[in-house]
Image 1 (spheres, helix red, strand yellow):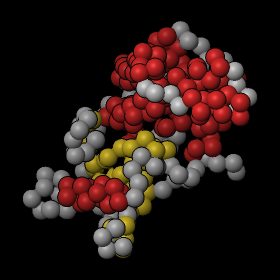
Image 2 (cartoon, one colour):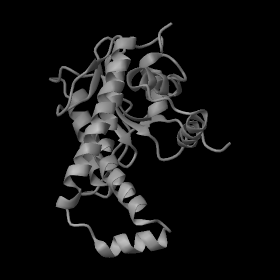
Image 3 (cartoon, one colour):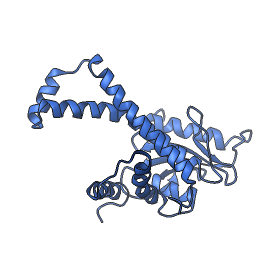
Length: 238
């Protein structure tokens, strides 16, 4: 039995393996470069006393925090790799004007990991980029529907609505355009795969994939904690 019915095991394993190696590299880099950056001794002192930590625990926590910042930049890439392996979809890689596309379904997507990855006036820049792809008659993507994907939404709710950010120069919102949309991660995974619970299914099998790669076995308690985080991010407390 495959892990999931909408992505090949090999592609899923490779995507998970890549992010694990990225995490390990980030941790090693934080160890090497830790003392190259000036540590604020006042902040460290007040964290140790105010958070009731000993020095060794604070040091481990700070190194982990620095490594986590580096890893977070790659989590969106992980989703891009996963979604780009679904039949009919293509991962356009890093640094282009779009992340994913499906020519069969005439869909484009720019994927960001969290709702606050892009904020303020930069949201309007995202909109203009999407508009420039799907609206001009001369564009090869004319008439496609373009999605701005926020894998982690601001609130645990689903949405797939016209993307109408504010234009700071005019202090007005752009007019709604059905071809330019904003969507949460769970809804976009469903859109791509046709499976309502695709994102949760992916989340549930990742620990098994990790175990097959690293022999690191998450305890039942750890899985329960992680599932609670998922529920609060996508389902809420109700």
